[in-house]
Amino acid sequence: MEGGKLSDSELLVVQMFADRIEAELAHSALEAAGIPSILRTDDMGGLRPHMALTNGVALLVRAEDAQAAAAVLADDQRLPPR
Image 1 (cartoon, rainbow, N blue to C red):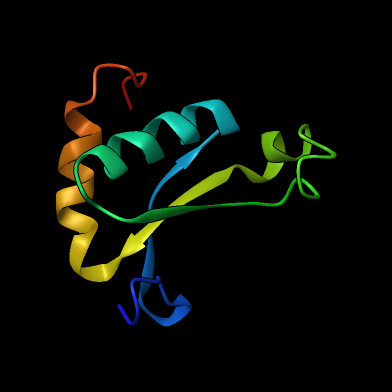
Image 2: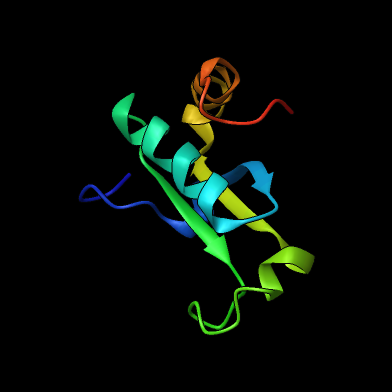
């Protein structure tokens, strides 16, 4: 991680979500655990939220954080079981 930013070359999808709300909950759980993450969705910047239903919302983390992120997400009671 250079300058506190996540670089595309080091990102992995840790989990896919059917909607942005679940993805945001997971994103906040990772942030609370000190794991930087970003969301990737193809919903035209929020103008067409229904597009996320077919494409999903990806939660991405650095490769070195993937195992810790998966553990945090598995323990988060706010998220539906996967």
